[in-house]
Length: 528
Image (cartoon, rainbow, N blue to C red; front, side):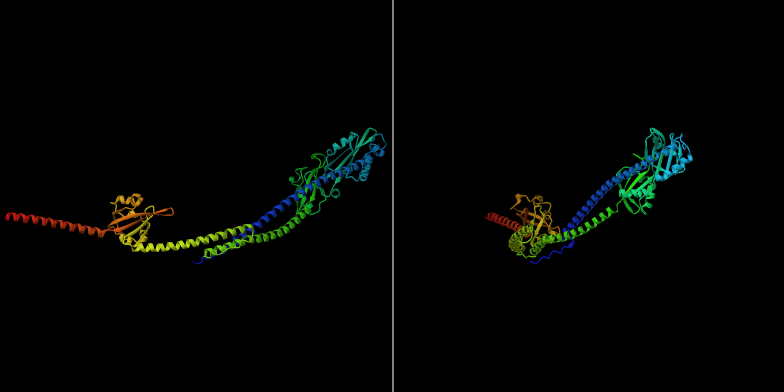
């Protein structure tokens, strides 16, 4: 037996090792990406939540600082309002009462002592009698509610947007006993200096926004400050007052920002906004460091995973390659090949054991099949020798009546070669007049088995030939075959015809002899 060609080498990218390695690397990469994404989201959310808490604390610290400053300003204003000299300037019955020039000079002096941006002095009726530092062309109505409150003995304070700037305005009544003689109102500008001072206390960048989105004071430095100015003009930046802080871009830097109202609860029409910004750069650096470490660790894990999966896959595929080599050897006729069943995982050992048992059985079956094949070949040679030397045509047909075997004598009788006759219905070689015999050949009726019939065949050249046919049936596996022994009886028909002719001549001679004897007897009788 010739050896079969060895199985072609499997490309590396189609091997199990490559697929396991790629799958392991893909799983490791996806797991790393998922962990990195989840960790980034957790850190980002935690940082935003922490920044939100810090901004809320910064807002509370801002309110505390403003309240402290307002109380201090109110205390200073109250001290001035309680001075006898100040009350005397407001008392019309005193020597200096109602002197506008004196009151104006005193108001300027008080304004310097209070370090205020402006001071307003009114009488008991609310009439302004001195207003040093008050912004020109600014309506008095902006501070009227505070002065009206002080006129009835109720001090007040509020953050107001005046003349393009923000002011912390404090108004105190000047009282003598239970009588309100007038009021003194002081305004403190909230500018960059105040924002910087508040930034130190709140640990956040503080920006004070006037009505209309104008920057009044900020602790930011350039270029962030310059980038913030056009952004404040957009209404979207100042929308959502009091909502949760959000991450926003200011120039090239990112900040966690929150907007709070100034001037009391809600957004007062005369107040502004407090914009608190916490730099996101430290958190971003932490995230970048975390991502870098994750990538380094992930790369190390990926390398270990790929190396481990390659080692494991090779350990798994090595027994399979040995099985493939053994199978190639068996295909090439090496039936004694076996594989080691004592190495590798339990699964591969069980497969190797099963393969060895299969090889033993296949070797046994191969030996039997080889012996059977030799016997069949000898039998076929004998059968072929017998059929080829037979004087009768031997034709085998399948269950459908189609020719599957055709000996040399059949070729001589019908004129078809074995290749031309193969697959042809045997009934097509019988003339139509023998209808019953044609049906038998087409249907293989059991009543014809073992009988010998005479019929007329049709040769390849369409000439008729007298035949004698007998059929036997045999089975092979699930298939049924019929074998017909066909004899050309042309010579016998000719011999029978000659014999009948000779018999007729003999009978005629006997008749003539009898007639001669009868005539002789009659002549003898006549002679007598």
